[in-house]
Length: 588
Image: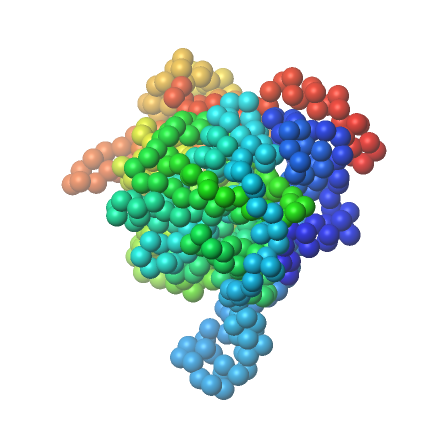
């Protein structure tokens, strides 16, 4: 498909999917606010040609709709994945006659790989910065609470210090100085594994930060691939052709020839600096923590380089559309990778890692639990905080329908499992320690065990001001803030069971009236509780077994130690409103 950013942008221009903004725009807060308004309206990509303090233009919102994600990649990968799943019975065990019948798509996959080109044929090497100065790049500060400017579409390339296996990941990059950045390697990321291996040996890890290039690189960098599948090979598969790479003297890595920028350097061992805060895709600030540093030795770029960026924050942002597309692409493969898992979905509205749902096979007693643990042992799915399982065919994307299916079959005495003291996503602060938290598994299997109520008729509940159903069987309630009434959820369990006996799931939120749709519900609820700390129910303990009885109450209120929600600065909001016609004329 597209071999570089330019090809993709030309397609967007032909399809009237990109707008050029020639008025000067400040990369500090203003550009991000413009981007947020456009993506909220599912508007076009934005090319800012006059960015304050930099000679480089900025392009954002490249992936801000499902349509543009599909334009970036094309229909070919989805068609091949479907053919793979349909052909597996014929290909295992392999027979020459069967392989020949499937030759078209097999040959297409065989085209994937890397191709060496000379430096003269690598546009990224057209200009070498005479003196490293990262501050010449138009790096965005998206939120007023951010610790500084951050590179938000970084393609970070590393190699294992022993095996030379490569990783291409997307790890945010905070600019510290003209030649140094932070390196936000999280606990579940491949680049962090490479650094750990280098640091064990007392060695610095060479790193190359790419910006731009084929849009397939962005998709590959954020896809949770099996460790045996290199990201560059996956990107080549998405492109439908080999990925051009060029080698240069003095740097151990090959460079992606069609990138816009290549920032070369190393991450030294045993050196850390405070990194953050940063407004992340959960919709809150991630806090200041010590992370490795990236010392930059050289910067290369195209002679007319374009700086690609995105803005992260409360869903739905660009990662939402990319994540949903990736899941749809890979969905047919889940039953092959995890036999017995018929369908699987992680919810972008809740930041992906906080919530997953699955339809599984239940052919013997509690087989579903085995599939649940299989899911929690698969790559980045290991960071799932709340996993819901059913054996009933249901569209997992329609969360209220899925939740009703589970709740109709859910028996809290046997179907709720809370696992304490587990790893947690680095960006999830609901656990009481950094990178640590808990998990919950909720099963809803077999025949229904109850009729779910759709309206609340139980009368007043002490301490509760608002009561509102989210869907059949799930009730939202709100009262005092956590800071004023930290035991409110426990009190609801102890004193409200009679009123709530028909409702298997009750969720205590800050404002029950504010959750008007699936996006708002999933984001508000699942980013604001830790299962071990914030799930309440009556229970008995016997023979090393906890037996819960309903209703299950989840305290999903904001807690005092949670990071702040991301809210744009009011004066910047007013400024952008005042400039809107200057920026867009009659285009918007």
